[in-house]
Image 1 (cartoon, rainbow, N blue to C red):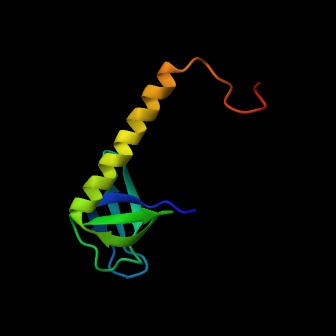
Image 2: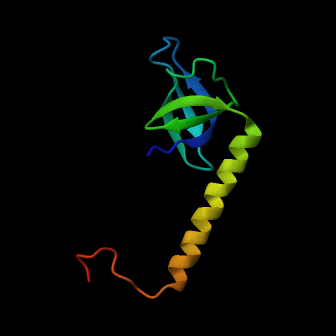
Length: 94
């Protein structure tokens, strides 16, 4: 199973299509991403990113909804872990 994460294109560098990169913001975490598969992506656009490559340009509303769901899930997971007693992380620690 693959997972692609939405992010916002902040800057773009390079003119050669296969070497074009962007700094992409994933809700406060910024990474350099390859734009070879999304030549249509521009400044301020939202893209889905998998394994360091933007694989699709997406609508801003869809991107923001997805980012909010990911943030809510992370917050719920943190809350759950804080409320649970210390548990072994794997069968090898039991």
